[in-house]
Image: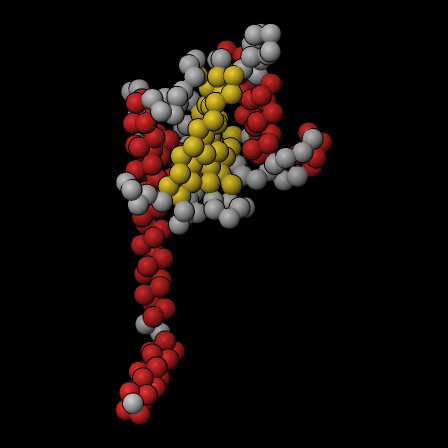
Length: 197
């Protein structure tokens, strides 16, 4: 896994006010940011959504459905978990990211319920995942570490078909008449240059 081209990051937010009261405020602010980018609520809602939300069952969800889920979950769970999933070489679709999240396993899965949105409008395509939990997750802990390794392995597997297609396409480009003609010209120039030496 040392040559892995995938990224899985976790950030945890407490769903509490400074006085300790349950609050979904941070989660309610995070969902519009992920869907519409930075800015005030009026600015965010004026922009098109950056992607489609999906649930852990793979079904598309409206932004309103996600906001309702966030409000309910944020009040009943003390922590909001934001994950970023990415691979370097492939613009994966939501289903591939969802499959990577499911790879964490139904038994002992740290995030049994989540919402996912894919951003294809940046340098590297990536997915943001929102989940809730009753415990703060330590990225250095063995449970998260095992989950992280499993999800990264799945992301690596999900990008393989894309990489293979890229390789085939590159090979096909090398097999064109123009490429063969250019290659022959370079060989001839090299032969002549060697004769002059």
